[in-house]
Image (tube, rainbow, N blue to C red):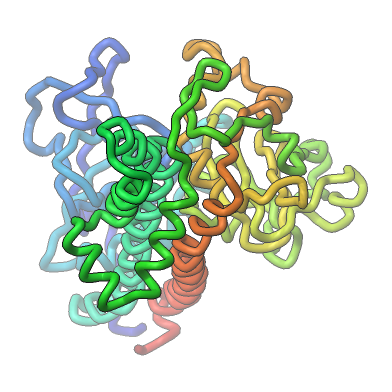
Length: 448
């Protein structure tokens, strides 16, 4: 590290302040405003119709830094936006510092920066302190070499995440077609109302399920008879009639039942916060999932930001949740849904839906049901955050199709969810690898 040089951060880059908006200035359309809660996945996007100086905007790929309450650098991945107060835009001096190296360096030193912050409740750092903070960096060539190693890991993580999002969209589209819009049932109803035979109605349902034309189905019957037969059986399992149940139109024979009649529902707990010995940051202890953790996960949740000691779990009788259980947030932030990947625990803002022999419904079906569910229906929009409680959650009416269709649906989506889970676990391992390499590369412990 003898060739590493020391610089003030202000010598390496220019830090631009974001604009402080008043609530009355937020709009429902226009240019998006990026606030800290948008970076952490905890807030809705608001907009502005103001015309500002160009340095008040960020573009895809820009480096920004959150400097109050939540600390850390981000590479903006989105459309042209305005960055709010409590965020700096950082424009690097490219002759001295590589942007991505600077991003990782800021990531590494953020805890040190925070430790020197001001304020007792909402800790923040000043722009002058940031600009005068000193770091040592290697040559530009070495910086790019290091950042390339770390960036490639992050690219793979993003790529896996995009694949997972696409796979989930496929599963959600199928669920919506079958169990929300009832497309195969309505295709049958339409065909029969037009005087067609039951055989023709089932052919119409096969078209709705597969998206194929009659000619394509004929070709399928000849080239892949087993697939055709399976499709025909699935179409046959859909009812031919819509009926009204408690004021809601559903396929004949299907019904709604309260969730607690179908699943073993439990609620998490929080030990006494003032007794700090029950809480841990050690991954060898029991995961303890929060709503924030759910906001940072996809379909499957693999990590928690805090852990509980085994003694805490026993002393406070905190419910242990098995792998492959649906979690649902229901306090303050309502409607976040995840599936567990290991035995875990949660705080009291999260409900758990354990699969039992009470029902033939599956984890995947329930996850997709909640993703489509209108949680505003549980109370008025203005009071829903306080109106929803554990009794409300246990009383949510779950749609129950016939068992044959659940089995057919499970056959179609089980591989999709397995792929999502595998990529999620791969991402967890990639993150661990990146976080292990990051300090060693940036502190000169590894030569690469």
